[in-house]
Image (tube, rainbow, N blue to C red):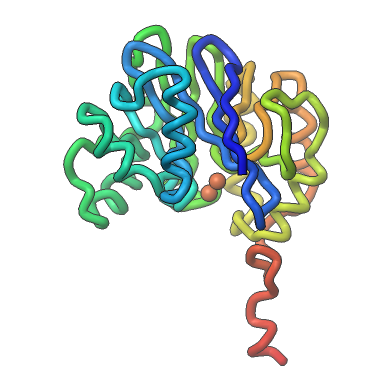
Length: 248
Ligand SMILES: [Fe+2]
Ligand SMILES: [Fe+2]
């Protein structure tokens, strides 16, 4: 399991590891700025690999923000370790995630929740927060970085396999197949409402958490697929039929 780091756009780096048995990459994003910021930590067990990749660019102890886009193992499983290592770092999440999850799990110091439209200045880069409930969790949000017009959409725009850092290909069909097989969205409607908002934003880069970063030209095919086809939960969780034993 090799962890690679690649520069994508003006101080934004993608750290990527393809994890078996899932057959998808797990990516974190590092923004190199006056206040260095990590978006997604990776799972608890991937801390050393992610930290090592960050240290190729900057001292991980300088991290100022550890951003989670929803409360889940691959999003913020490494937060304790990164926050312990970087004494000035704050945990950043949606207002709901911090109120409900961070506080509920006893993480009450150095935490900050953001509501829709609020911003965070990193120096040259500025993060703007979009609350996107039910895409795919109750507490989900996305981040738009204004100077590079970069969208961090978490699990939306996923592409399976070991993708290069930048993807221009239409991989929307494999995306939909993964969504149907793993069951991460309860319904299409909240996703499609967010797709409308994202289309109006017209990001230059879409930094998928699983797969490669999509260029502006690649995004419309993915949006079309999300509008025109079903991809919500259909009884499968990570490929396993739920309730099959009880029904038999
Ligand atoms: Fe997720
Ligand atoms: Fe994820």
